Every structure is written in structure tokens, then in C-alpha cells.
View: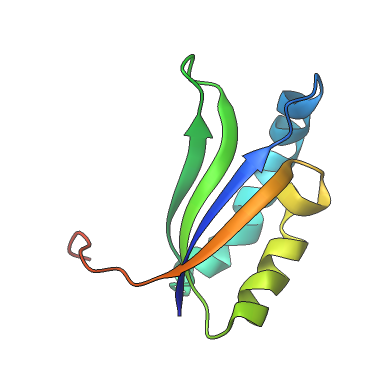
Length: 98
């Protein structure tokens, strides 16, 4: 099942430093998921000034439980970066060629 995940970072004074500290761990953590096709596309949400304020991901996991396990163990979750996460089931109808 495919899912749209939109995760918003905290807005407190330490939010940007938490994201920057967790970012290398997050990228290493999702690398095998990208290679396996679990993370189809993703990237940071930006504010008008270009600062990272969250994440958007289209993911493909066999079950919602499997998706939730990833979300709970991602360094952005365990590092207190993501404060609000919305998950919506979806189906990719158009995508660039592989």
C-alpha cells in the first residue's frame, strides 16, 4: 500500500538544531528503504525563506503497521524533530520513468 506522509517539525527555538543533528542519521536510516523501493520519493518541506520545516514522503509498505514501525524508529521521530505526522493512504497514478 502506498502512503503520503507529511511530517511537521517543531517550531520551538531548538527545532532547527535538532533537525540538523538528526539529519545524517535520518539519511543513513532511510537509505536501505530507498534502495528497496519502500521510500519512493521524499524531501524536506521548506518555509518561504528556504529553511527545512518538515518532511514529505511517498512510501510503499505492505501494511500500515510496517509504515508505523518505520515512522516510530526514524531518527527524526526518536530525535524529537517531527512533532506532527499525517499519514494518508494513496495510489501513485503518474510517476517519472525509472
